[in-house]
Length: 484
Image (tube, rainbow, N blue to C red; front, side, top):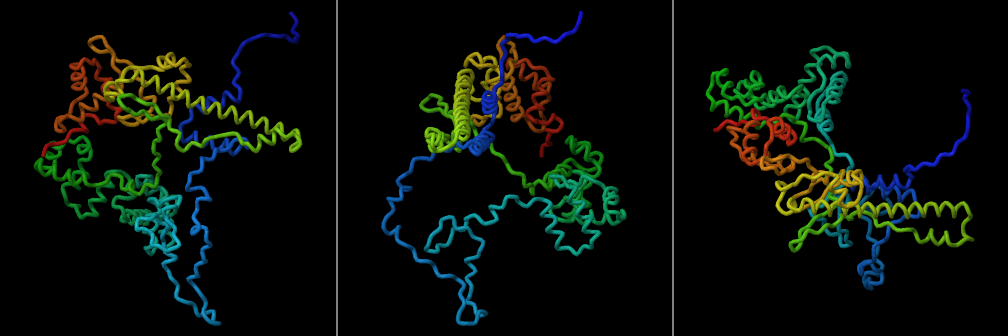
């Protein structure tokens, strides 16, 4: 059979992802911070999009200004003046005018700003961190070029906790110095503030802090130096036997150790804290739950009236410019429509979650019911993928706290009476039991499983351990605390 090329027509149905549809899907899965950036970027790229100006208030009306406020204000005299013909003769300078103050409430009466007014340095984009703090201390020491190079290498190898991530051999290989010079400079850096800085592990950091307090001969120093593994498991009885001291002295030494800081560099962290801004508010008013979308800070978009007038008037712009503006107008209309559709979809999903999880909003996390994406998708008539995009990285403010929308979806766990309970509700119950336990005799995973079984929740020990790890709760040997 001979091979040949031929053209053939074929009719088929398939879903084509247009750029507009891709944009709508992208807007749907953005969180609040990303949505604000996307709106600003679209306004910069599309001239037909602009932010609607708020209605002027009476205080913003220029005609409401009084005659006294409209009078011309005389120019204030300069504080520095040249007297006579001699330029070297300068009047006394009022240095208060150059002080580090920020007058937030500007007044021509030269009023003194309040004491808690922000400083100029409050507006610096980058706050000083651990490295800057250590470099500032080193500038007050008389170091030669080799010592400065070694110190620079040590500071460059400190992590965010202030732990030195290299060793003496690395210093010698990089700086080409002797072992004694490297060890001496490392010891010098470790003598800086805060105590315990530039240690190679937690044990060395704690020992350095005790040395700074003059407790090299103390029992606390001996426990960290010789029994660090037993200290981690809180096996104080074995520490007392091996150290030939009483349990009361061990507890007193542990109290001293508890006052130390394992990671001294944390207090100088300059990482910015990103706070969660809820996308939806659920408030209880007069016994009913009200859903309110959070539109604060989002620009109110509208089509530019001036560009629309240019499109209507044929004699002002040429054909290419008109086609460009018409294309941007269609894009702006679709963008606004996609944004409105996003808000409506979030409202529908939140309304469905409120219906399924009404007991949670009424009574608390212990009453969370099993729920899957398919249930909400069927309820609002949308696909599961749409519900998944809406609930990702979105947060709701409820009377009991702020939760991610994904939190309300939980797998079902069967109970002994044939009913089901949500896995998140079991986690919440495990947290409550551990919070109420005796710290001297903490509950094991087997005991937790038995207690849950008494409440009608049949959960294996492995599942309890998994839930405990997800809650970031330590095992029983690390939760044990000796009685005093």
